[in-house]
Image (cartoon, rainbow, N blue to C red; front, side):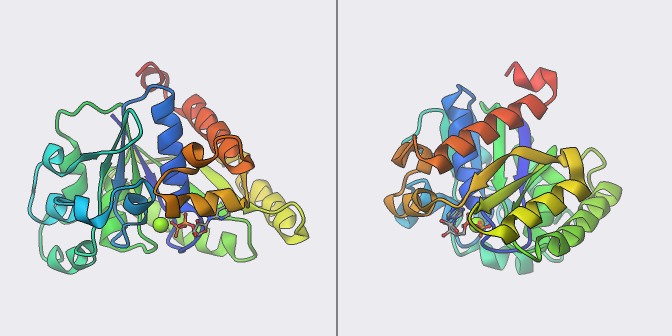
Length: 258
Ligand code: ADP
Ligand code: MG
């Protein structure tokens, strides 16, 4: 199972939207996919249609109580796509785990069991705290959604420093699969400028696919389905399908055969 963390310590940059829709696109191509909700807000869980009442076990139980993966996972309405849901309890996990010796490795250990998945996407909370550290320690690689706005690059350097720290201390194999520009608005000159700047600094690391600002993407979660299901032909859905294809081409050969 290849593990991809979707992280950026800024809130509202499109992490959850990216996690849900890329997971759906991968599932649609036949990959057995697990979406891990690592944000106490549980937006990925709600957005994929798993209500709070259906989250008997969650990432909290997995991380804090050592509940086994298969017990915590639930199915979704999308074929090939399962969810490890999050509840508000997870907000206490950072404090409860603070003195645990293996506190940064909990998620990695929990995912390192025999399981039926080809790929797992981890939707991180908007911080660089213990939960995100767990995701980066557990992950093979990182996907960073970057909103096309003026301060985008500033936050990114802090994230890249954290990645370096994780590589040095916890997970030398951690890679960066790419940076995805989100909420691109071609009517806004500033977004164009930001996108140009980001590409000139980060070059090939930036995915060619750009996710446009698209109202269908923001409507879908309230219907409890990924945008890809809500309106598969809208510009946002098409962009996420293209992003998933591009992501697959960047994965190592042996994984692509999965
Ligand atoms: P994060 O997980 O980084 O906090 P979200 O994916 O939840 O970000 O997105 C923040 C808000 O912006 C949500 O209301 C979401 O529906 C909306 N949104 C995300 N991506 C887009 C987009 N490309 N176009 C329009 N709205 C978007
Ligand atoms: Mg989110």
